[in-house]
Every structure is written in structure tokens, then in C-alpha cells.
Image (cartoon, rainbow, N blue to C red):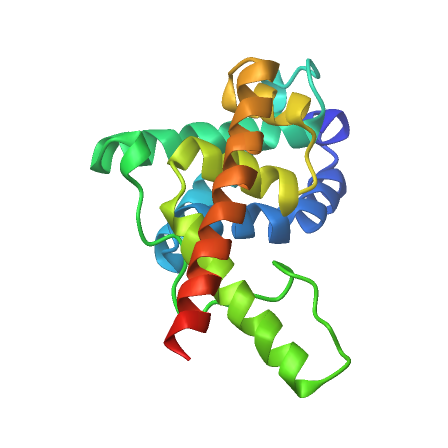
Length: 185
């Protein structure tokens, strides 16, 4: 980012190529609307470009980038509805690969894993937005609790609690929904 701020446009291209996929997925997973995700994604990069000349490395570039994305997302959510009242995170056509590991041993096991992945997606939708964000940043992006705390602008312990509560709620939800599926058979 320092190189870009000094006029090296190839440095920006490297940053963009490295972060474009994960940043876009961050928005899609948070709001579930690909068109809106694209708008917020473009706005994030626009803000990166605008801030280039005044950029100061107080944190890693990734942390700074996701802080911008987080702030845009929070502004959008506040404009629509209360923060903890998010719905429709995932749409049916979204791919569930990567959410749960696939067992390649048998077609039955594959079908079972796909079913569990679908249950997980439905359970993620039910999480409060702050837990959902912490969980997705941790699981999908691989960010530590400290980085997530910095992105969200909250304390480390609050972030750890959000991740812990999200994991606990997801385990309970998937287990409950799995049992309901088995009871219906």
C-alpha cells in the first residue's frame, strides 16, 4: 500500500488481485445479495484508492481493508434495519463447498455431508449479525480473534465470546435440525 501511495500502480494491482475474492465473499456471505455485495465491494476499493495518499500502516493492510468493509456493511445494515435482525444470508443457489469437509468414501456419506452443509447454512442465517460476522471472518478468512476485534472495533474478549457463542449456537442448531431430519425419515 505504501508503494501504491507513492504512485506504483502495479502495487495496487497486486493488492487487488490478492484480496478481491475473499473481500467479495465477505460481503456476499454477510448480506446474501450479490448485487449489493458488488456495490459495497466496489465502494470499499474506491475508499482504498481515495485513502492511498494518506494511508498510514497502523495495522496490517488486510485489517485496514476489512475495517473499511466492516464500516460500509454496518452503515448499510443500520440504514435498513437493526443490526441483530439480519436475515437471508445465503440463497439456495450459493455453493456450500468449503463449509464442511467432504467425505469421499461413499455416495451416502457425500449426500449426508451435503445435507449437513445445507443445515449449517440455514443455521448461520439464524445467528445474530455480530456473531455471524465474527464466525465468518474466523472460519472463511482465517482471521484471528485479535484481527477480528480490530476490524469490528470491539474488545478481544467480546470477539472471542462472539466466536464461541456462534460455534455453540451452530453446533446446537445443526444437531437439532439433523435430529429433525432423522425423525422425518
